[in-house]
Amino acid sequence: MAQAPGLVLPAYFSYYKSPVKMVATDDEGIQAWRLSDETGGWELANDLVREILSAVGGEISHLTVDSFIQSTERDRGRHLRGEGPVFALYETVEAILDVAEREKRPLTATELALIRGIRLQTYVMFEEELRHRGDPAADPGLVQQIES
Image (tube, rainbow, N blue to C red):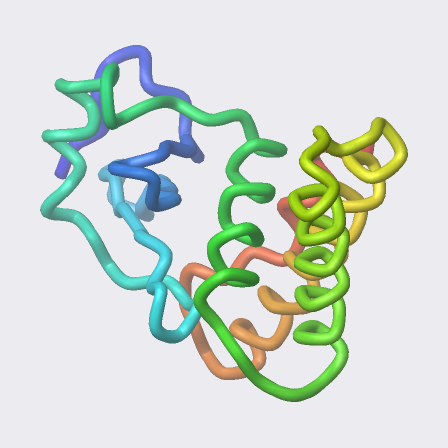
């Protein structure tokens, strides 16, 4: 699919609460990738490009890089289970959220900052593993765009 006028790639979206990223292809086209709830990896989703670009609003919204990363890691933490450091960090985030929910209070600024920082870290860790496994859409360097 050819790029849409005015669209700056890469671009990040929430599509019915699922993270989607669009990237440029070598032939000046667009490739879309949607987060898989089953694997935490990226599934080719080129069939969504036209719908997303023509229907932003309601259940489809444009995301900043930071919001995209936070959304991706929130979903990975909710849907995936496993062993190892990244899963221990997902459990840490869930524990923080559970305490605030049990206490029927909003998260404190410190808790929000801690969760954000952990999710930035888990994003890099998970994306590095995806890249190691050959996922063509893995992008562990994305975090550097918001840290610089």
